[in-house]
Image 1 (cartoon, helix red, strand yellow):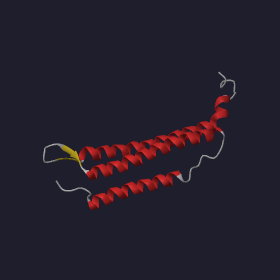
Image 2: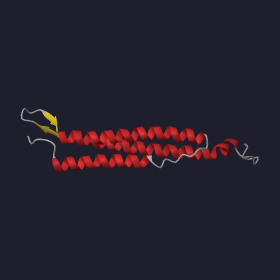
Image 3: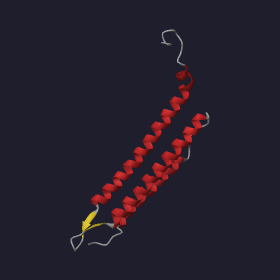
Image 4: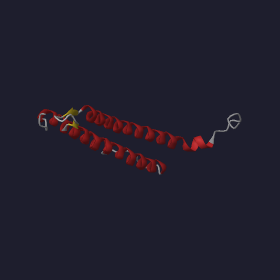
Length: 132
């Protein structure tokens, strides 16, 4: 009814910039969590497909699969923890109209991911397991 009279909705006017920043923060959080879930899914697939049958007929997860999956799980957990911390940190800074830029966090996470992928590559080259 207030739109018909030419008055602006005060809630939208007051929180317009905060709403924009809040939803941008939420989108960023969802993207980081998506990356963490993707890394965890790849780690689960490595464990599931890295099983071998030993001489007794039992299935054993190979050491190489454990190393690869472990490095990806740790990296995925780091991404999830970073996402949660950054989401709450930015949320509190948006309320106070403070700076919400994080120049170092993504660089550190990219470094962690590179180390995990390097570990997987080195493990694949040097095969840390005995042949069955």
